[in-house]
Image 1 (tube, rainbow, N blue to C red):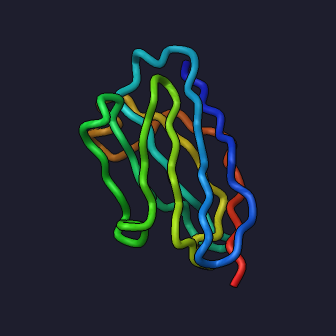
Image 2 (image 1 turned 90 degrees about the vertical axis):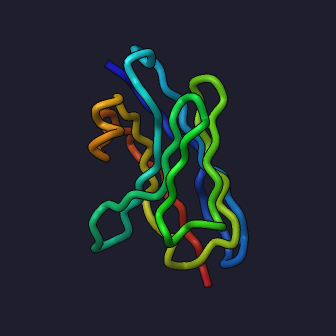
Length: 120
């Protein structure tokens, strides 16, 4: 099993910045990469960004391209969020992928989530 735990998040005004981090533990050797998803009230969970462990491959949702930056260091992943908008308000979930999950776009291991609130 793989455990992932988020940290960071919080509240900020529109235009501000926040960083969310995630630490993986357990059988991390079985994972290929990690990513972030988010779920806003009344909406379905959506993909935000992901990165493979080599750091050579990153993907972003169109809605965050140019504003969010994902990175990793050892078994820790972070996401720097700049120019935040009220529509970025959501619970942000960290997730870990196996190689099969990466190729199919489905993460297998999930954290509990951390709240990000952006006020106008």
